Length: 211
Ligand SMILES: C[S@@+](CC[C@H](N)C(=O)[O-])C[C@H]1O[C@@H](n2cnc3c(N)ncnc32)[C@H](O)[C@@H]1O
Image (cartoon, rainbow, N blue to C red; front, top):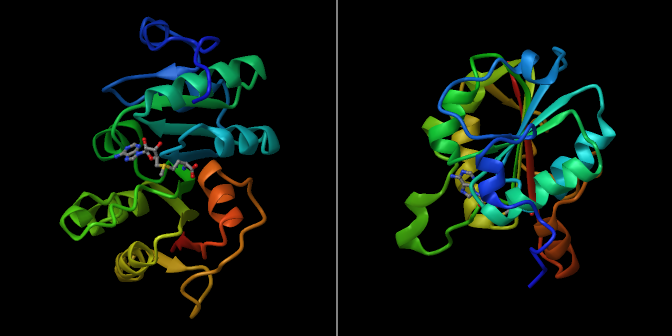
């Protein structure tokens, strides 16, 4: 297990930190960032590797990471601080509860959901994050022409989510007739993605655009 001794504590974050947000009210994002650059959301950022690398690569955009995994949050805030990254913030909470609070319709230019928990057992399938109502919510929050990107190595989950995505009238599959692509090189790799690639798993990537 990796050490946590040099990480900022969750109590310190909760008592107020400029990179950390735990709120039940919608922030005014341009005021938070001091500019109105395009706003991008990653749901379930895990250890924050993808979010941090993307924020470094795309300085002209603002990034929000949303997760409820304390250690990942502590790691990500600590690293963002060390690297003096100003165009990313870490939000705490369950995406189902927080996404409708944090953003308004048309506010997001991109949404990334990388390797959401697959809940492979039949009796747990209902716990999966990607469901029709959630897809509708995400589509509503995207600006016209904005993109929703998903990745999973769990084929049954991929096949379930593609049905909801294809059925959502606000969205259009960027790859046309091809439902999935199996390589993605325009964004950083996540921790889980690297693990799955090393172990020879097929990865199901999809990208949808808001009509
Ligand atoms: C399998 S991990 C993938 C982490 C990272 N995206 C990666 O690819 O390395 C799933 C992540 O989603 C987070 N997560 C699961 N359900 C969530 C929810 N309802 N709201 C916010 N985060 C969630 C978990 O805490 C975990 O960090």
